[in-house]
Image 1 (cartoon, rainbow, N blue to C red):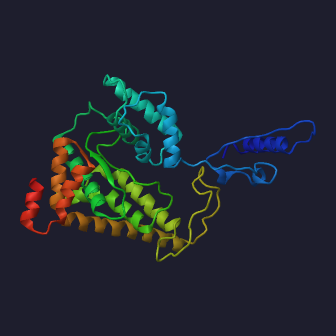
Image 2 (tube, helix red, strand yellow):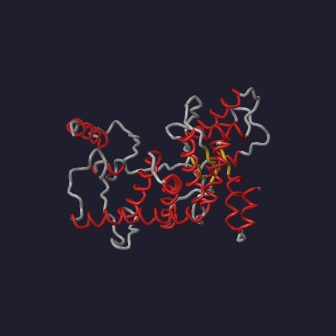
Image 3 (spheres, rainbow, N blue to C red):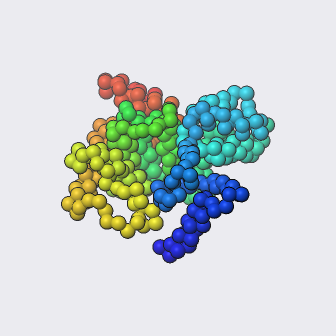
Length: 342
């Protein structure tokens, strides 16, 4: 690996200092790493790094307390509830929460406000999660239409599936490297995921490509990131989580796999198992794709309506999506038409 000798020298120097050969001095070593699985076992023995503290992203209570600390340094409008902001930022670390407050203050200052309001916090969160708006980007009408249907496909499936995170906002305004974004915000902090939730997540990710196929009868490159994430989820379901009925409850990955090219060891399964893994991953994604096609094909009117609204407003919130999707529950065709018109 090129730096193996230097790594061994550093490890030996650490071990010498930690063991100690003199009784008149005391050395305390404090270290941090985000890859504890690749540490040498000699470092983890009793008497060395035997006090371990695992630091995870804060829960809603921790985020509330962190936001209170940072909010003291800025002027907040009276209607801003810090706890509501904490609930709407699951997965944020302390540094990201500090950045959220700073960005909110900048947003308010640019608008000439004397205090941070809820819309400033909303804009700052969108910037952190989705990237800054690219207002100067020139987009053709056909590209806008494809993007609108792509994001509408994500949103319709996310709204109709039961075990899925609720929709927060849909936009076709280019942000960061994306031409549009469908943002979902979970109601609670999640620490484990069911098979149904992960399957629904794949269906939602494939919803954009599915909408393009149903409406335009062709595909675009806009679904590349969605396909990568969907394939990664399916791979982990099969190889890590034991969620394949054919392969059963077994993990097919090693701890060191993926770290600087792995540790050079042979994979712990045969070529036949490798082929079965490929087949199971492909079947998982294909089944989710077919389910997404069935869902959108049955609600094609609502796909058209949501895309139409997106082309006009460019950004749609959860309430507006609820109005459109609620029309799917109306049995009468005439009532459905009136609901859509309204």
